[in-house]
Image 1 (cartoon, rainbow, N blue to C red):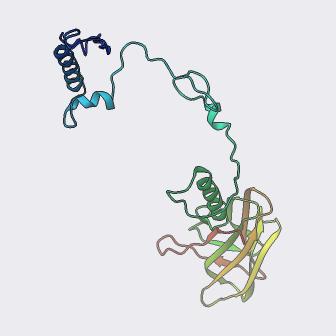
Image 2: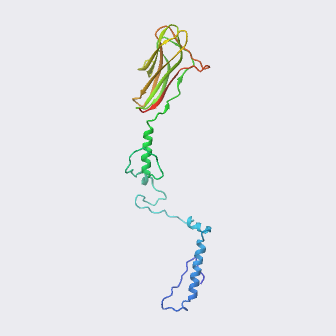
Image 3: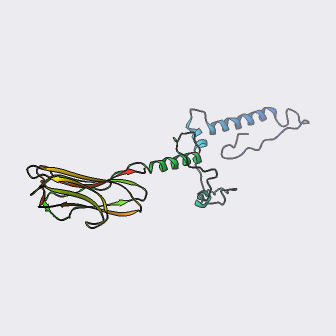
Length: 254
């Protein structure tokens, strides 16, 4: 008989020990098996034949039934429920810096990443905001606010707060005091520096404070100038790039 494969399944007769070569027909038995084997080979194909792709990437017909999971993955949904993944605990977790490698487990990689991030939190972060400045020339005798600067401070982090005035002169020889105050021109003095105001030439002045924030939030610094006598003049110019600056730089956790 001709093989029914692959559209159907063959029903082959198995001879018994009592059967003769004539019944069932021995030659026909071989022919049937040969036909069936050849049909199977034709359906599967050979290595260079694209027929093999049907085994590697089968095409499903009808309704595909979702598998039933057991253990941690339960149910018959076509995707895994979030709860089966996010509820897993990180047994053995211990934060520690290191280089993540391709041979690390997920837990080892998380340990290293968290440790690296923690270590980086103490690094300097640079300029906190654009420097406060002005190009308008001003005068002063009594203490007056020159610039105000606000930035977002983080508790425990340290900042270098700097006020620089490039060109100062006085109407009389006097002491010029530059101050950094917290909040406003009447706030707590963070630091101060004094110099003698020149009358025949120009001088410059700077005051700095290394400040560690005690709280997280908005922090305002005021820069002021005061002359002990006479009138002081702070000359500024946008054309000659002569202007004061007040700024804060995050220098990290120290």
